[in-house]
Length: 146
Image (cartoon, rainbow, N blue to C red; front, side, top):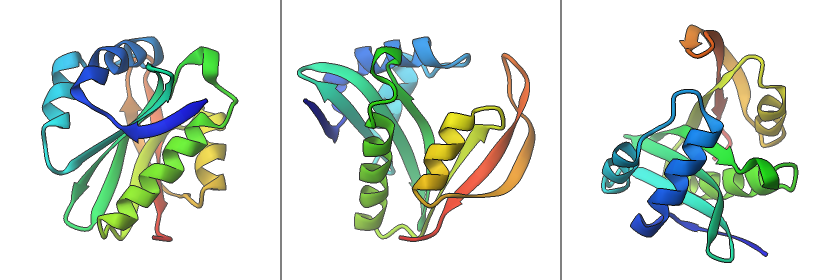
């Protein structure tokens, strides 16, 4: 059974490993640890038993949230874990009185774009050459239904 819970320092090793397996420019253990210690960052993990199988991060500035990363272990994809993480983070945004939540996504990442649209995000712009390894534009998406 998958549970969603706040990330703790004990989860950082597994999240850092998931970052390396998922992204071409992953956050380091140190980046994750530093961010976890900040009051304006929120991290949630999806766990099966004690194993982290997914996570999502968001930071808040004033009344806006920005989702930094969302990742699901490749062996656990297409099971609704990304949706669970996203819904719980949007609930976290609401509890913390955020008005909007934004994120960036590779223009070629059709699965993620579909997930975000299903949850109420809309494309509001494009960041040219936002991503590296490989270089690619990124859509800016916003959720304003909080």
